[in-house]
Length: 327
Length: 118
Image: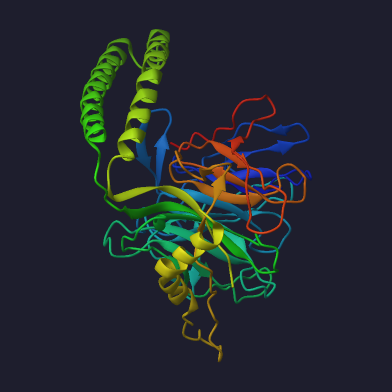
C-alpha cells in the first residue's frame, strides 16, 4: 500500500491515492479540516476499478473478472498499486495500476475533466513498442517522477521477487519516458537498486519487497531514493551467559504455552462464528470479546519474541527504511 | 555509533555492490546514440524515526516524502501492510537528515486513517 499525495479532485487540497491488496485503488479526500477516510475509486460506470483478481467484500472471498481486459486471453492480474498521473496532458489525472502478479502496468484513461473524473472501464497495458512493459519481479510501488530531469515524467517502480521463477530479483527500477508531453514513450526498465542477496554483518541491507520514493532529501539538486524494504543481516554469534541460556529456554517454554493458548482461543472463536453466522450481531459481539482477550496475549507474545530475538544469532530479517543518497 | 564509523562500515561492506549495480551504463535504446547513465548512490543509510529504526514493527513499510506540517521540510509518511499511515517529521538542523518519532495520520474526525489494505 503506497500512498501518493496528489490533488485528485482539483480543489487545491492534497488527497491521498493508494492501491490496496483488495485489488482496487482508494482515495482519501483532503480538505481544510484534514483527510476523510478512504473510499474506493470507481469507474465511470460506477464499478470497482480492478485488473482481474479482487477481494469480494460481499462474498468475503477472492474473486476474478475479465470485464476490464483490453483483449481476450490475457494473463490474470492483481492490481495492488496505483498512482494518479496525467498521461495524456489533458489537465485531468489518469490512473496507472501496477500488477502484483507480474511486472506489468496498466492505464485507466480519465474521460472526464479536472475535478470531475470519469475513468474508462478498460485497462490499457503500458507498452514498450508493441510489447507490454514488464518490470522485473512483481510490482509493489509506482512513482511518477522526472528522474533524469529532462522535463518528461518517468516512472520509478519498486518490485518484489517473482514467484516463478524466484530467481528474478526484486529492486527499484527506472522506466525512462522518451516521448513527448501527452504521449509518453517508455523505454526498457533500468535497475537503480537490486536486492542484496548475500548475508552480511549488521546493519541490515534490503533484499526484498521494495517500496521507493524519489525526493531530494539532501537538498543538493538531484533526486535521492528513500526505500522501504525487507532487510537481512548476519548477527554475529556470541557466547551466552548461564543466566541468558536459562532465560532463553524459559522464553521458549513460555512462547509455546502462550501460542497454544492463542491457537485454542482462535479455534473457539472460529467455531462460535460458524455457529452464529459471521454477520450476526452476536458474532460481532463475540469478536469484540475475543479481541479484548487477544490483545494482552499478542502484546506478551511480541515482548517475548523481542527478548528472544536479542538472544539468538545468525540470519535475521526485518523491515526498515533506507536513504540512498544520489552522488 | 558515531556517524562516520557507521558510514565507513557501510562503505566497507556495502559500497562496492551498491555502487557497481548503480554505475553500470545501459545499452543505448533504439534511436539514441549515447548510453543513458544510471545513477550512482552512496551506501544506504538506515533512517530512524526518533530513536527507533524507521519501519520497525511495521510490515512492508512504504515511504513517501511530503511536507505535512508546513514547515518547509519534507516529512516521511509511511504506509504499511495493514493500510495505516504514520508521519515522521523531518527535524531541523544541518547534516544527515533526522526524523522525529512517527505518529498516526488522523482523519478530520480524529481517527487513524485506515486504507484497510489487508
